[in-house]
Length: 450
Image (cartoon, rainbow, N blue to C red; front, side, top):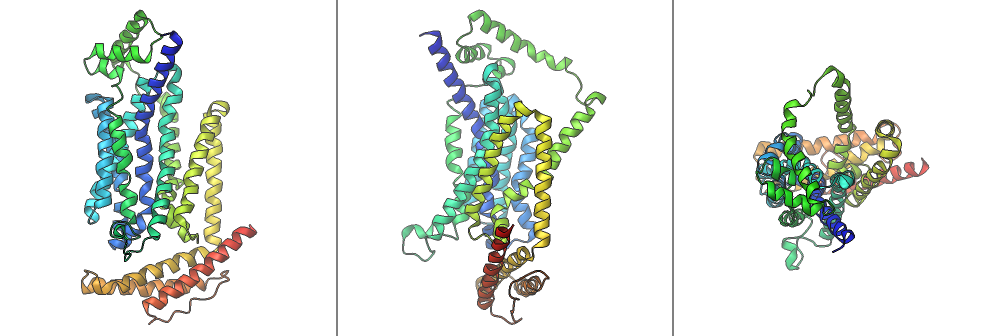
């Protein structure tokens, strides 16, 4: 075998190992966003209050926080590869548990387990990639994790759109055998459960990749095994160079004792800026948009919000590529300034639109009436106490009043909501649908004029 062939084979092996390790990022993005297509059905099915619905939605985030804080421990004790394997199992259990959850509490636990996987993945995956990749490829391969996060977000939106579209074609009372398992009422379970397939495949792939050579030498007590991995990923190195590399890695264990302190006056400002950048990135509302994309697009009057949300994921992916392509040309600081100005401008436009166009509020109130009317229609078979049923009727009445008030706002060009207080739920639903369609059309015209 020539040196060129050896280097080519090594490069392919390293890329394979890095891609497999970075797939934890793909599942990170998928697991985080896939709930966006299911959250409205979950809230309706289990009749969740705003607070309980928020707990269900944020359960994965609480798991992520805990996983990120504790993720370094299994990576150090068990090894990077073993930790990534367990991450895959956590994703798999979470997907199956979420899709099959019979009630809210088991659903919260399942989502929390998935969040643990996300948190641990943010620690173990970049660590593994940086330690398995040679210096020349390290920068490029390290970016795979971030790429896979945004790619996973896009695939989650596409998956939700496809499942939602297919489920609409199968009525619950259809004679097809699959109708009992796959229909609009069960679509949310498939949206969440489908993650089990890539999670299972990722877990199997973790058996293909080697352990990090650095961990084998410094923590695993398997110096020869670590040396062999270094030989495999660096075939162009001589035996002397490999031994020198192993010695440097072994000696690096003592570096911690002489490491400089993190919180010092010199580093105080950079650390504060890094913290503020991360904080304002979240406060910009991007996570709210991603988590509730179909709901928000529906409130804006878009007729097929599941499909429309794919555009958000695609935009996220495209501009991730743009950022990766410009970061070395323009520099980190310049990109941060451009990004900051960009999201300040976009938030200002959104605020102006929601405050200036009553149509947004009318669409939102009309959707509320439709949902509350549906709950009233379900009351005869609902396992609720008399007090809870009365509360459902009260919310239905309040939703009608709110819709009437929204259509009476100054600047709204549509017809007023002429709903009598004793309107039957079916009639209220039909009228709310008409008002929603009219308001959506007015919003579309306004967007065309702009």
